[in-house]
Image (tube, rainbow, N blue to C red; front, side, top):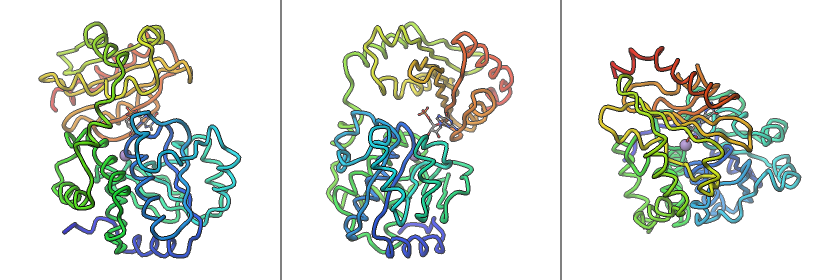
Length: 345
Ligand code: 5GP
Ligand code: MN
């Protein structure tokens, strides 16, 4: 049995909205990850079983290793088909906003969503939800939005209607947002849910391979390069930094997503509890900052204070507009400021 995480009033409202709606749209955050797509496609599969018209709209491209997901080929990219998407959003009775807490996280999709008369339902697990939705299901204590989608479907009384495809998507989101159940994954109910998903016929080992074992040669070599040449360890701060210039990315035929997970690697070292990855992003003309921590060290505070960002306690991100040297300087200032917390952790 699962604890009733989502408030009953919210379950009732969403059930009513879904029941009355004919056309629904699901939107998720920019550069969608496994949980963004898993929760969106999982919910879409469920709504299809209820004979609803449902479209999933994403702001931009998603990684190749998620392309196998059931329903992925029907996803509408806003950066390619904005006119069509605008129409769907304007005409939607309900707009489900999954895996993001603020309209700014959906980039150009924010405007049509804000302007639409459709009832907005947020289902998310990031801190501090913005109040743009009629119903806000926000649970930062839950490790993935996909898990929240599972809980919502079950609480509405539709466990039986979860198909294999729906279960595969939900599992993918739960797995990716916990690094294959290696962090944020001590809640035992996660494993109860996995057991329920297995009863739908998912092959969890196959999903793991499809998501995690699909590296290109360039990515694997780039990984070797950054670990050997570009990782600086600051043992006195229990911290490690990796930085990557545009030129270096070019040398390894970098494609989007190739550095996914790099920021987690230094945390495999004993006594390291904070890791930062800086990547020059020529497309957006900035330095993308990824931060990770273990234990109680709040890397989201560092992201907010030094890199115009935010996120979760142990996984956050931000942006730096300026030169790489300056970003590294700012990073060093952050270490000095947070020294006490780093050492206490
Ligand atoms: P990643 O390092 O995987 O890109 O991002 C990890 C987490 O940090 C995301 O799930 C999101 O919560 C947060 N995050 C990443 N980039 C940004 C950003 O630019 N601004 C804010 N507010 N949060 C971010
Ligand atoms: Mn998520």
